[in-house]
Amino acid sequence: MKKQNILKILTPPIGEDGCWWYRVKNFANIANQEKLASVQEIKANEKDFAIEAAFDACDALLYRFASESIVKVVKVFKKKYPHKPVILETDDDLFNISPLSNAYANLGTKEVFLPDGTPLWQQGKAKFDLYENRKRLIDYEFCLSQSDLVLTTTIRLANKLKEYNEAVAVIPNAINFDFWPVLDIKKETGVVNMVYAGGASHFEDLMMVKEALLKLMETYPQLHLHFVGQLFGGVKKGLPKSRVHFWPWVKADGHGYRMACINADIAIAPLEDKEFNRNKSSVKFYEYSALKIPSVVSNVPPYADEVQEKVNGLLFKTPDEFMRKVSALIDDPLLRRELGENAYAWVKEHRDVKVIAKDWVEVIKKTVEAMKK
Image 1: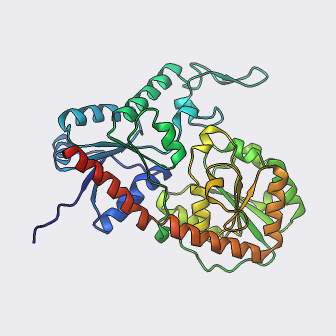
Image 2: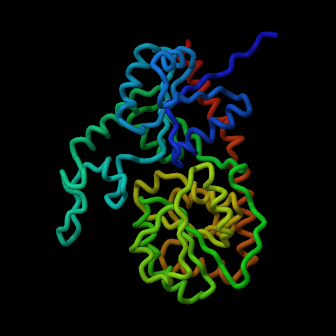
Image 3: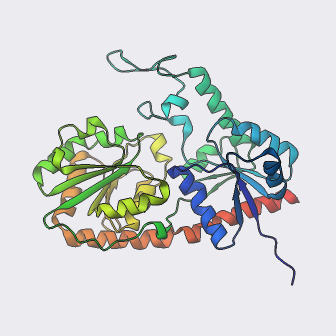
């Protein structure tokens, strides 16, 4: 019997943050375990001859725009291997970064001042360099346009990216349930735990519901609020210190265990309705749902695309509605359980990495085969 050649995918050094985890390592782990493909990572200290050998042996180069240095790699690879695809993985709308996001430091292209004239981002201050940022986005555009395939998270973001390259495929974020265990932890009597997980780009989103959080904490003395990843001073201010808990980020492969150990009863995901956010994925909802935690999320894309009201979650548009929906879950443990179970069933059916990884490998394989012709 003729031995079947397995698809060989090469990646640059894989980062340890959540983006690399969800968009590359998550799929690569399953592809390697299930022998769907062989995904090899170039190590940061690899010798030149070893890198060249890996280039020669691979069928495709898969990369993320982690730094501008990748542009040189793409140029060299495309010149030497014109019949092997370079595949860009990207999961955010980098052309619409909010000035209140820390990412604006490297991707902002305009100076920003507060209403009183205080500079928020000013050329030459705090290493903010408009020239370098514009150049960085030009490099990103180059990678978009020159890649033989672009992989991304949602149809909305795909449509945006098609302005630069028609060859865009949607592979949604997915959950590896081996890293998101539903733990049987005894609930503390008389305590309701509410969790929010998010990074430094979500200040505006949380401030949308700040007043509602203050009222909820005042109304429900049993309510404890857990922030995972980032805790903003402006959000924390005024909240009862004894009932606000902060959990810093851990490595991506431990994040699910950390979230499970919080033993949350309710999860929240406020999101402002703006273009950058509309082009994001619902990964917070997937994570909460994997632990059977019922979610209260903003009634805007991407959440509005996948969360069904009173079926697998609750949606809100205003702070008052947010407060009503959270209150309903605090007051009704049976509703919490019903929505949590339904959310788990939805994410298990639609976002299991063991299923999505097959699509990931298949779309790369088709691109490889098409370029060999």
